[in-house]
Length: 222
Image (cartoon, rainbow, N blue to C red):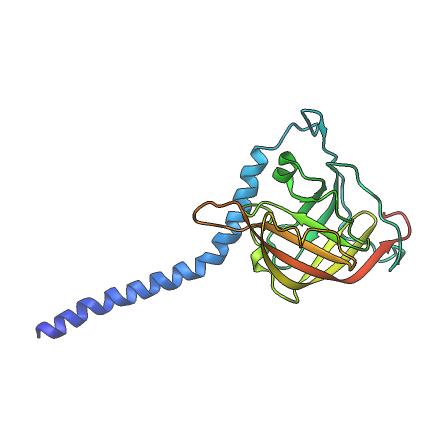
């Protein structure tokens, strides 16, 4: 009788714990996506003045055409439009990202608050060589680790749309320049800081992507 009573008491407790475990697991992914939006919203509160300037830095906020009309003339060859330092010139999109990532040309603390930053020493999307882009791991590149080999990434600019596929996952130290140096082949390198419970800022993680399609606009984008 005593044994039966214990079973009747313990069984509901076990069932309850299992249900809680399932619920927590189901909430992890939605929470991760919510965290991305919350972190970016927090960074928005820290953005610089609306006129786009602080201590002499002029930030140019361009409207990037993400959906090009079917009537737009395109070609697999063309010319890039070189942006000025601190100019918004591209948008990174991926099915694995909760948000589209704005890309500014050049690196600066204020720019990292607004989006990803492209190294001014790297080539622009659509050019031959290594296009190197980085962002904070707790905001715009918080979901970079969700990318795997074969995943598709697109970079939209006002001179064309460029599609890449993830070829390799990388991990390196901040003093290791092999992945960010110029290359003879055409590639896209995305990276961010590696999360570390000890708070070490030295680790970097990212992806190397190979070009899949080039679409230069040969006429004015409507």
